[in-house]
Length: 164
Image (cartoon, rainbow, N blue to C red; front, side, top):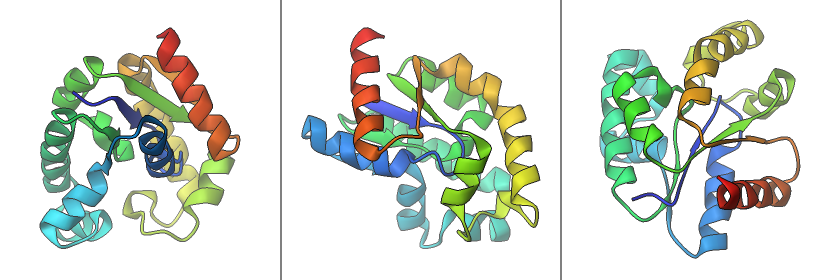
């Protein structure tokens, strides 16, 4: 079973924190978006645009299932909580919600390939937060403010998981 699973909105730092946690614990880390991209030969953004969000969510769910079965740190895509089956799996995993204010997230995502943020990223991110917040709260054992340095965020995750 996965050591730690990171969830949160786009720009929360899930991949960077997963990489650092992997180094801390001396285990591998996986990013479900990267797993999907490698397997499908296309980025998540391209997959969403060409096959649709529902098809991407199918691929994401499969990647999550495979990742949860391994002794690794898992960085998920922000929308992994959109599916009830994924939420069920995340509830039984050591799941951490990385959260930051929208203005911090928007600065981090910049001009990245984020089709779900569309032409008005601030409005789209606010909408995603409203939609997903309850699901993040539902599945996470702890919520960590992802606003400090990478080392500070990793320390907060490690400390929080010891207390959870």
